[in-house]
Length: 74
View 1 (spheres, one colour):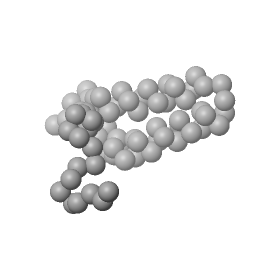
View 2: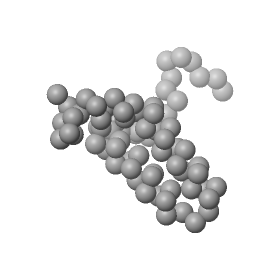
View 3: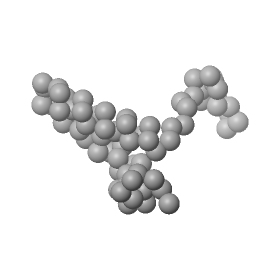
View 4: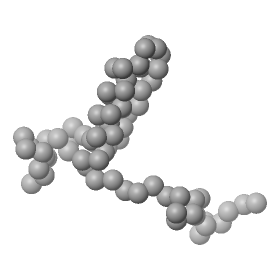
């Protein structure tokens, strides 16, 4: 069965909810915390790389600069 361009890959009830900056930061921080707790070096490296990738994709450096010292975007 082929899908047309107008058909969604997933039904509406299976789509991910968008998250705000704070939620994204918690997710990335959670990945870093998980990485340091893993016993296996390979797993640690994989989770750490995922956290770095997500921080890069979400452009956290820019978000941190724009948020200022209080974490509030101006």
